[in-house]
Amino acid sequence: MASRNYLKLLPTVLIAAIAFVYVVSNVRSVYPASLAAVDLPRPGEMLSAGSSARISAVIGSTLTASATPVAHRTEIEANTESALGALATTVRPLSHPSALRDAFESYFAFKTAHPGEVREPYLYFVDYGLPSSTPRGYVFNMNALSIVDGPFMVAHGRGSAPTAAGVPTRFSNAFGAATTSLGLYVAQSLYAFTGHSGGRAYHSVGLRLDGVSDGFNDNALGRGVVAHGAPYVTATRAGRSEGCPAMETTRAKRLLPKLANGGLVFLFAPDSNWMSRDPWLLAG
Image (tube, rainbow, N blue to C red; front, top):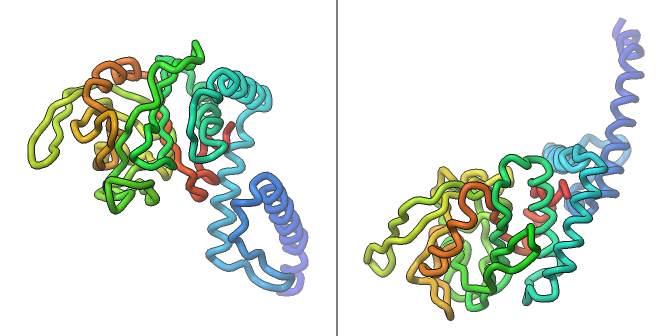
Protein backbone atom coordinates (compact mmCIF):
# COMPACT_ATOMS: atom_id res chain seq x y z
CA MET A 1 0.00 0.00 0.00
CA ALA A 2 2.80 2.39 0.91
CA SER A 3 4.51 1.79 -2.44
CA ARG A 4 1.26 2.53 -4.32
CA ASN A 5 0.83 5.80 -2.44
CA TYR A 6 4.39 6.69 -3.24
CA LEU A 7 3.80 6.01 -6.94
CA LYS A 8 0.71 8.20 -6.89
CA LEU A 9 2.70 11.04 -5.35
CA LEU A 10 5.67 10.65 -7.66
CA PRO A 11 4.31 12.85 -10.52
CA THR A 12 3.53 15.63 -8.05
CA VAL A 13 7.01 15.42 -6.53
CA LEU A 14 8.64 15.50 -9.97
CA ILE A 15 6.58 18.51 -11.05
CA ALA A 16 7.47 20.36 -7.85
CA ALA A 17 11.16 19.57 -8.33
CA ILE A 18 11.12 20.76 -11.94
CA ALA A 19 9.30 23.96 -10.93
CA PHE A 20 11.84 24.61 -8.17
CA VAL A 21 14.79 24.22 -10.54
CA TYR A 22 13.08 26.45 -13.13
CA VAL A 23 12.36 29.23 -10.64
CA VAL A 24 15.82 29.15 -9.08
CA SER A 25 17.44 29.16 -12.53
CA ASN A 26 15.41 32.17 -13.58
CA VAL A 27 16.04 33.98 -10.33
CA ARG A 28 19.76 33.32 -10.67
CA SER A 29 19.74 34.67 -14.23
CA VAL A 30 17.95 37.86 -13.17
CA TYR A 31 19.57 38.42 -9.78
CA PRO A 32 22.81 36.39 -9.70
CA ALA A 33 24.26 38.56 -6.91
CA SER A 34 21.25 37.86 -4.68
CA LEU A 35 21.91 34.13 -4.78
CA ALA A 36 25.67 34.32 -4.51
CA ALA A 37 25.57 33.25 -0.87
CA VAL A 38 23.08 30.42 -1.39
CA ASP A 39 24.51 26.90 -1.32
CA LEU A 40 22.26 24.87 -3.59
CA PRO A 41 22.15 21.16 -2.76
CA ARG A 42 24.00 18.52 -4.73
CA PRO A 43 21.94 15.67 -6.20
CA GLY A 44 20.57 13.54 -3.37
CA GLU A 45 21.13 16.20 -0.68
CA MET A 46 18.46 18.11 1.23
CA LEU A 47 18.22 21.90 1.00
CA SER A 48 19.33 23.50 4.28
CA ALA A 49 16.91 25.67 6.25
CA GLY A 50 19.12 28.75 5.78
CA SER A 51 19.41 28.29 2.03
CA SER A 52 15.69 27.63 1.76
CA ALA A 53 14.88 30.88 3.56
CA ARG A 54 17.35 32.84 1.42
CA ILE A 55 15.92 31.43 -1.82
CA SER A 56 12.37 32.19 -0.67
CA ALA A 57 13.32 35.81 -0.01
CA VAL A 58 14.96 36.23 -3.41
CA ILE A 59 12.07 34.54 -5.23
CA GLY A 60 9.65 36.85 -3.44
CA SER A 61 11.62 39.87 -4.61
CA THR A 62 11.73 38.50 -8.14
CA LEU A 63 7.98 37.98 -8.22
CA THR A 64 7.50 41.57 -7.01
CA ALA A 65 9.61 42.86 -9.88
CA SER A 66 7.98 40.63 -12.51
CA ALA A 67 4.53 41.70 -11.33
CA THR A 68 5.11 45.10 -12.96
CA PRO A 69 3.59 44.94 -16.47
CA VAL A 70 6.07 45.12 -19.34
CA ALA A 71 4.52 48.34 -20.67
CA HIS A 72 4.94 49.99 -17.27
CA ARG A 73 8.54 48.81 -16.95
CA THR A 74 9.26 50.30 -20.37
CA GLU A 75 7.70 53.59 -19.28
CA ILE A 76 9.69 53.57 -16.03
CA GLU A 77 12.88 52.92 -17.96
CA ALA A 78 12.16 55.69 -20.48
CA ASN A 79 11.38 58.22 -17.74
CA THR A 80 14.52 57.22 -15.85
CA GLU A 81 16.69 57.72 -18.92
CA SER A 82 15.16 61.15 -19.52
CA ALA A 83 15.85 62.19 -15.94
CA LEU A 84 19.42 60.91 -16.10
CA GLY A 85 19.99 62.71 -19.39
CA ALA A 86 18.85 65.98 -17.85
CA LEU A 87 20.51 65.71 -14.43
CA ALA A 88 23.33 63.14 -14.31
CA THR A 89 26.12 65.44 -15.44
CA THR A 90 25.39 68.01 -12.73
CA VAL A 91 24.84 65.66 -9.77
CA ARG A 92 28.38 64.96 -8.63
CA PRO A 93 30.08 63.35 -6.85
CA LEU A 94 28.24 60.07 -6.35
CA SER A 95 29.34 57.13 -4.22
CA HIS A 96 28.20 54.50 -6.73
CA PRO A 97 27.53 54.53 -10.50
CA SER A 98 23.91 53.48 -10.00
CA ALA A 99 23.05 55.88 -7.15
CA LEU A 100 21.10 58.39 -9.23
CA ARG A 101 19.60 55.74 -11.52
CA ASP A 102 18.32 53.84 -8.49
CA ALA A 103 16.73 57.01 -7.11
CA PHE A 104 14.97 57.84 -10.37
CA GLU A 105 13.86 54.26 -11.09
CA SER A 106 12.39 53.98 -7.59
CA TYR A 107 10.61 57.31 -8.00
CA PHE A 108 9.00 56.38 -11.31
CA ALA A 109 8.24 52.80 -10.23
CA PHE A 110 6.36 54.01 -7.17
CA LYS A 111 4.60 56.78 -9.10
CA THR A 112 3.46 54.23 -11.69
CA ALA A 113 2.17 51.86 -9.03
CA HIS A 114 0.64 54.54 -6.76
CA PRO A 115 -0.07 57.65 -8.85
CA GLY A 116 -2.57 58.99 -6.33
CA GLU A 117 0.07 59.16 -3.59
CA VAL A 118 2.61 61.19 -5.58
CA ARG A 119 0.86 64.55 -5.43
CA GLU A 120 3.97 66.75 -5.54
CA PRO A 121 6.69 66.53 -8.21
CA TYR A 122 9.61 66.79 -5.80
CA LEU A 123 12.23 64.18 -4.88
CA TYR A 124 14.64 64.61 -1.95
CA PHE A 125 17.73 62.48 -2.67
CA VAL A 126 20.62 61.80 -0.29
CA ASP A 127 23.73 59.78 -1.14
CA TYR A 128 24.85 58.33 2.18
CA GLY A 129 27.75 56.60 0.50
CA LEU A 130 29.52 59.96 0.71
CA PRO A 131 31.15 61.24 3.93
CA SER A 132 29.31 63.71 6.16
CA SER A 133 31.88 66.38 5.22
CA THR A 134 30.63 66.28 1.62
CA PRO A 135 27.40 67.93 0.42
CA ARG A 136 25.23 64.92 -0.43
CA GLY A 137 21.62 66.10 -0.58
CA TYR A 138 19.49 67.34 -3.48
CA VAL A 139 15.89 68.23 -4.14
CA PHE A 140 14.74 67.65 -7.71
CA ASN A 141 11.66 68.82 -9.58
CA MET A 142 10.81 65.60 -11.41
CA ASN A 143 8.32 67.28 -13.75
CA ALA A 144 10.75 69.95 -14.92
CA LEU A 145 13.76 67.59 -14.50
CA SER A 146 15.65 70.33 -12.72
CA ILE A 147 17.57 70.79 -9.47
CA VAL A 148 15.61 72.85 -6.98
CA ASP A 149 18.52 72.89 -4.53
CA GLY A 150 21.77 71.05 -3.97
CA PRO A 151 24.16 69.72 -3.22
CA PHE A 152 23.81 70.53 0.48
CA MET A 153 24.87 68.99 3.77
CA VAL A 154 22.68 66.27 5.33
CA ALA A 155 23.06 64.47 8.66
CA HIS A 156 23.01 60.71 9.13
CA GLY A 157 21.94 58.67 12.16
CA ARG A 158 24.40 58.42 15.03
CA GLY A 159 23.87 54.66 15.03
CA SER A 160 25.13 54.47 11.46
CA ALA A 161 28.67 55.69 12.16
CA PRO A 162 30.82 55.86 15.32
CA THR A 163 31.71 59.54 14.80
CA ALA A 164 30.17 62.56 13.13
CA ALA A 165 32.85 62.49 10.43
CA GLY A 166 33.15 59.81 7.79
CA VAL A 167 30.81 57.53 5.85
CA PRO A 168 27.86 55.78 7.52
CA THR A 169 28.15 52.00 7.24
CA ARG A 170 25.33 50.60 9.39
CA PHE A 171 21.72 50.89 8.30
CA SER A 172 18.76 49.53 10.22
CA ASN A 173 14.98 49.66 10.44
CA ALA A 174 14.99 48.71 14.11
CA PHE A 175 13.39 50.72 16.90
CA GLY A 176 15.93 52.42 19.13
CA ALA A 177 18.80 51.93 16.68
CA ALA A 178 19.19 55.66 15.87
CA THR A 179 20.31 54.60 12.40
CA THR A 180 19.60 55.87 8.93
CA SER A 181 17.19 53.62 7.04
CA LEU A 182 17.71 53.30 3.30
CA GLY A 183 15.06 53.29 0.62
CA LEU A 184 12.02 55.19 -0.60
CA TYR A 185 9.69 57.33 1.53
CA VAL A 186 6.47 59.21 0.86
CA ALA A 187 6.46 62.68 2.43
CA GLN A 188 3.49 63.27 4.74
CA SER A 189 2.45 66.33 6.73
CA LEU A 190 4.50 69.19 8.15
CA TYR A 191 4.58 69.84 11.89
CA ALA A 192 6.40 71.93 14.49
CA PHE A 193 9.56 69.97 15.29
CA THR A 194 11.40 70.22 18.62
CA GLY A 195 14.83 68.68 19.03
CA HIS A 196 17.86 68.86 21.30
CA SER A 197 21.44 69.67 20.44
CA GLY A 198 24.27 70.30 22.87
CA GLY A 199 21.86 69.91 25.77
CA ARG A 200 19.60 72.69 24.51
CA ALA A 201 16.20 72.52 22.84
CA TYR A 202 15.67 73.96 19.36
CA HIS A 203 12.68 74.33 17.09
CA SER A 204 12.31 73.82 13.35
CA VAL A 205 9.89 72.55 10.73
CA GLY A 206 9.48 68.77 10.55
CA LEU A 207 8.21 66.55 7.74
CA ARG A 208 6.79 63.13 8.56
CA LEU A 209 8.06 60.28 6.38
CA ASP A 210 6.25 57.06 5.52
CA GLY A 211 8.80 54.40 4.55
CA VAL A 212 7.61 52.24 1.66
CA SER A 213 10.69 50.04 1.21
CA ASP A 214 9.31 47.09 3.18
CA GLY A 215 11.77 45.62 5.63
CA PHE A 216 14.20 48.52 5.29
CA ASN A 217 12.39 51.70 6.34
CA ASP A 218 8.74 50.84 6.98
CA ASN A 219 9.15 51.54 10.71
CA ALA A 220 9.98 55.20 10.00
CA LEU A 221 6.69 56.65 11.23
CA GLY A 222 6.79 54.61 14.41
CA ARG A 223 10.46 55.42 15.02
CA GLY A 224 9.88 59.14 14.48
CA VAL A 225 12.29 59.31 11.52
CA VAL A 226 11.48 62.63 9.84
CA ALA A 227 13.09 65.30 7.68
CA HIS A 228 13.76 68.46 9.67
CA GLY A 229 16.08 71.39 10.16
CA ALA A 230 18.83 71.18 12.78
CA PRO A 231 21.50 73.58 14.10
CA TYR A 232 24.12 70.83 13.95
CA VAL A 233 23.91 70.93 10.15
CA THR A 234 25.65 73.92 8.59
CA ALA A 235 26.96 74.86 5.17
CA THR A 236 30.28 73.13 5.94
CA ARG A 237 29.48 70.25 8.30
CA ALA A 238 26.75 67.80 9.26
CA GLY A 239 26.40 66.34 12.72
CA ARG A 240 24.49 63.17 13.58
CA SER A 241 20.76 62.75 14.04
CA GLU A 242 18.60 59.98 15.49
CA GLY A 243 18.25 58.58 11.97
CA CYS A 244 16.66 61.62 10.33
CA PRO A 245 17.93 63.15 7.06
CA ALA A 246 18.28 66.54 8.75
CA MET A 247 19.38 69.68 6.90
CA GLU A 248 20.10 73.31 7.76
CA THR A 249 17.19 75.04 9.49
CA THR A 250 16.79 77.81 6.91
CA ARG A 251 16.89 75.28 4.07
CA ALA A 252 14.30 73.08 5.79
CA LYS A 253 11.86 76.02 6.00
CA ARG A 254 12.25 76.57 2.28
CA LEU A 255 12.34 72.99 0.94
CA LEU A 256 10.23 70.80 3.19
CA PRO A 257 6.91 72.54 2.40
CA LYS A 258 7.49 71.68 -1.28
CA LEU A 259 7.82 67.99 -0.42
CA ALA A 260 4.94 67.83 2.06
CA ASN A 261 1.85 65.70 1.35
CA GLY A 262 3.00 63.80 -1.69
CA GLY A 263 6.67 64.32 -2.51
CA LEU A 264 9.14 61.43 -2.32
CA VAL A 265 12.41 60.93 -0.45
CA PHE A 266 15.13 58.45 -1.48
CA LEU A 267 18.05 57.63 0.81
CA PHE A 268 20.86 55.75 -0.95
CA ALA A 269 24.04 53.97 0.10
CA PRO A 270 26.07 51.29 -1.73
CA ASP A 271 24.81 48.62 0.67
CA SER A 272 24.62 45.30 -1.20
CA ASN A 273 21.98 43.75 1.06
CA TRP A 274 19.58 46.64 0.54
CA MET A 275 20.40 47.14 -3.17
CA SER A 276 19.59 43.50 -3.97
CA ARG A 277 16.29 43.43 -2.05
CA ASP A 278 14.58 46.82 -2.00
CA PRO A 279 11.19 46.27 -3.73
CA TRP A 280 11.28 49.55 -5.66
CA LEU A 281 14.75 48.88 -7.02
CA LEU A 282 13.53 45.49 -8.23
CA ALA A 283 10.33 46.92 -9.71
CA GLY A 284 12.09 49.33 -12.06
